[in-house]
Structure formats: structure tokens, C-alpha cells
Length: 104
Image 1: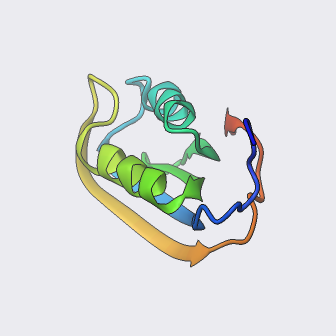
Image 2 (image 1 turned 30 degrees about the horizontal axis):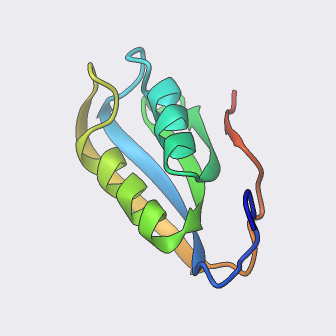
């Protein structure tokens, strides 16, 4: 079924992240949102008062893995990522979020 965001045997998962380095003031949230949508994921991203970026992504396990690599190694063109922490990774039976958004 086209556009299906249910489980459909797609092995869905969810993971929380926090990215450290020069990741604020460099369009990191916008690029994260764009990359998530490109990969067909749902989630959110937000700046913290600690100078990090946090968020959550959900979707098929392979695409979530690709997003984790992107968050760890690429980011926005002007960012300098020093560390990426992923936690609370879990299997989910269906997506718990819709779309990909920047939170404030």
C-alpha cells in the first residue's frame, strides 16, 4: 500500500539522540528535518540550552540506522559534530509521531 506508515512488517524502531559539537547556529535542525523526511522517517529535533541538539526519530530500522550515521558523521554543512549519543532505542509496532518537526 502506497504511503503506508504502519508496521507492515517493516521492522519499525524509535531512537532518541543528542548531538554535541558546533551544532547550533549552523542550520543543523533544518538539515536534520530535511534528512529525516528524505529517508521517510518521522520525528522531531530541538536545540538545548546546553549547546546540543536533541531529538527522536522513528521509522524502518534500516532508515533509522542511516539517520544515525548522518547525525554522527555529516550533519549540516557548517556543523562540527564531536559526539553523538543514541539512547532508548526500541522496537515499535507503529509510528508514534507524524511528520518531522522542529521543536522550540
